Image (cartoon, rainbow, N blue to C red; front, side, top):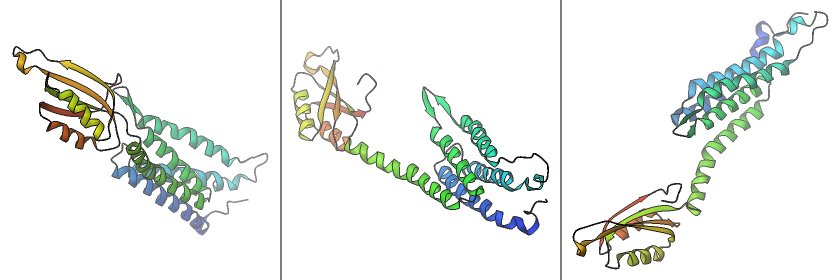
Length: 239
């Protein structure tokens, strides 16, 4: 038997290959816009390559069916694609200052390979749904997490420098609570000065609240006796 997928018979396969090109390009474009390490070209080539591997595994060996004792296993190629794409994903992951980077991009390349395999298998609707799921997770989930962080805001650190001995700290704490900020902890650091009437101190306040911390720092900075105010993120030890 000779292969029936020759000449004009290969044209229908271009639809599946073109679908892989389109869908993987959409995912790659999103990564390119976000300036990730793997962008439009990488994702597109991975998706198209995976689709071509699947098409070849399905139709590229039909002329060998005349041979005795020949068994075709198209699923073997799919398994090898899953294993092989790990080399590309591993090259996108790196560690900088104890922080792991590139995990999302590596996972996206993995998803693109799956989309290409689905297109090559003729599962175009499933491939399109997976592409849509990618945008839902990468874009939609990001907005969801941002909103959740606003609702359940992580503690913020506010440092206030003030004149010691004038009741400024008490007024600052009163202002924080009146503006809806809960004082989780505080640490006072007094500064040495030759002028006893102008002794200064710095208090680090660990706060939790739902409002914008900029509004709080603005109000604190105009309190009588406050010298400077700065907001930041708490360290692992809280300060």
